[in-house]
Length: 168
Image (cartoon, rainbow, N blue to C red):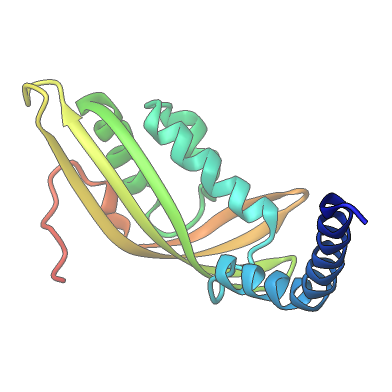
């Protein structure tokens, strides 16, 4: 038998051994990937809640105060202050908003959500210097028809044009 025949047999045996090992490892690897991707509390956030905060961040970043505010219940406590602050902030300069959902609990009608919200503000008079705000935000959501609406938002002064920085 030529030497190449022995090499081909060895290759087939090695491939068979690798396939068997892959079948044993695949379930463990799949679980490890899922666990690494999941963060506590976030996995329970419905996709529509994630979409809501994605839209909110995008609308604030584009300075679109009316679109941003449509996600808030106009009868929630502090809404008028929120509205005034958001319009003033949007007029002040360029905004970049980033929101991470830290925790989401509740059902398909009501949810409590904790956010890590970062807001970068570059004022028109700041010569390109950006101020960064970052804070954990607590809010409550209610489903109205097919849409989630924010009915509570703390701290409300997060959007105030001049506000003291939170203690860390």
